[in-house]
Image 1 (spheres, helix red, strand yellow):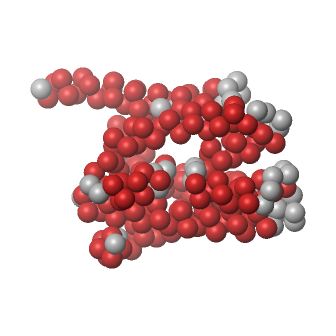
Image 2 (image 1 turned 120 degrees about the vertical axis):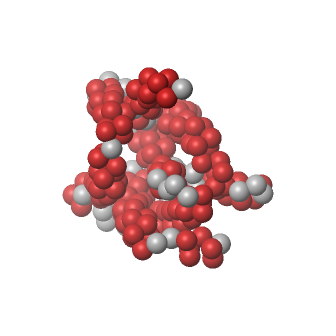
Amino acid sequence: MRSIWRTLDRGLARDIALVCLADCLVGVSYGAIAVSSGFPLWLPMLMSLLVFAGASQFMFIGIVAAGGNPFAAVLAGLLANARHLPFGFAIGDVLGKRWPARLAGSHLMIDESVAFALAQREAGRRRAAYWACGIGLFACWNLGVVAGAFAGSVISDTDVFGLDAAFPAVLLALVLPSLRDRATRLPVLVGVVAALVTTPFLPAGLPVLLALAGVVAGVAAKEPELQEVG
């Protein structure tokens, strides 16, 4: 584990720390929303430890708080996390070969840890980025949820504090440099349009899955280039 922290350079460690900070703030928001919506204090904490998927956790709390069926809320969360299947194929090499490490690494498999891993070209840096981001986010998210849960009776409206906007803002700042690559802009544009167009009509979580159409568009755009090379 020490080799992982030694592999991180200052810039990568800074980016991971910023995401962890933003994730902690969103965790505060989630804990406050859950408790102020009438859920017991222990529920958001237990979900954060066992589920560790912010989008699914927010979805479950929102659907049940609005009077929805808990089974439908669980199904919606599973559907939103279906993207983890291709994630596993993409970063399977960073999890190691031992089952304890693979199980722990699978639990830490979230959008941010996968994104940081895929952004690295060297195998050592991929592994270091994945584990550092995953462990850091797990700790910060759970600390934020605990703080938010206890403050739920005080912070009744998290929108007033802008906590929900902190995480997307940091992620956008990290993604912007990669948009300089022309091949990256097309799938990003397709994914954004798909998500924005379907958000008013579909339940929460589905627009995110439909945004994966951008990946298909990117592969389709590169196929002619591969054929020319072949």
